[in-house]
Length: 41
Length: 584
Image (tube, helix red, strand yellow):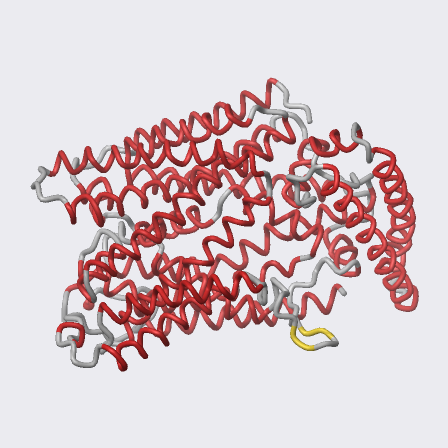
């Protein structure tokens, strides 16, 4: 493994958990935006 | 719009702060690595702020609140593809770029394909980015001319000239550090402006009531599907599908293949720092943009209790009043004022109903408010038509002027100067990164690659500075010519970007994922895709966001087919790249 690949990833053990966090947060925002739209309409 | 001595003081001091800070932070080693990539020593948080500062131009901050005011918050969906793109850039692009230690994204294409593919892609980037950066200078200058009466030539020279000082002298390091400071000032000023709008609402009307007023007038349409009674509207610019799919391709192309962004995360001290910067951008971009759009909803609520101009562009309004269509404008304006007064009564009644939780009244008043809002929108549309008829250069769109008109009419002295300062800072933030990217590609992809002479590190550093200066001057010249063509040019440049972004992205997608496709095939595929994009655009079938998807898909399909049909036996092109994808 190269030094780059050996670098410790912050917060999680694998990068894929970071990717799921970003996608999951977007999906959560979309749901919240939907509820926001409905509530104030 | 009154611009007082205090406003001038705040503006000059803020701009001076940035220039001095930029020059102070510009000390770096005098070679290509130092000037173009800041010796690859930037931490993740500078990378993140630099990425965000590069993406957000002055028009972003001026237009977004106006967009929410006139069309609602659905514009936010334009950013829904961005987090997906950040993930793909981290998986596919960042490891390759870091492993190969490249200076420009297009350098990789020569290693993967051949020199002609590298030069074609770099040329497409220089063409579209060079023109659009010129327009990035003139767009805010046009707004400042209209609202403050500033001379456009002077504003172009002032904005472009000051920017050139620290970009040319400091390179990547100065760009990144000033973007960090610019970001803090911009968001602080926007927050103060939003707070001021809320503070001036009548007693008993707070954030919740302002949101109800906006929501019941159709301004909180954050999620829309694009489906009408006749099916899906392909020309609808902002809905969840065009945002997620079209926005994904646009963001992937922008962050993965546009040197003005690639150059930002290549400055990171490691692959990890690049990825964290990009992923955090993916986390915070949508909420931040939501906050900026929310300012437009607060302005909308504010103008339900205060007299809103029928047309927000001051200079064009003056021209209208002195034109042959003055009477027609006055009649439409009077009709708009009457509708505003009726709406105000409805909004006050709605506020009372909300306070007493009177559901029946709320439902009735909401329907009434929506009808009145439709009528008001129709009158504003008719005013825009009068503007187009009177001023042929104008598209009649006053969205860019809504926020600034509020600032000029209602914000106290000093704060007006700070808001004008953020127009400069946001412009500089994105233009500095673009100039730097243009200089990088010219130096690395063309000068260094094609020159037969060997230069010393100091000579390469000086050449890079010279190219940054030349591109800076070129952009000021484009800005000088650009303003003669009026507002329509701004939209034309957005479309110009969409012509090329998809094709450039397609070339990179083939490089990463179609390992059996070689240079001749991808070059042919890119030319055919570009022709297809221009044909589709000229037939006016789709909103421009979809051109990014079409361009990328066409390159992949045409390159694949060309490889299978014509270049099967070509040994060199069938070689897979030496790089292998790391495990994620």
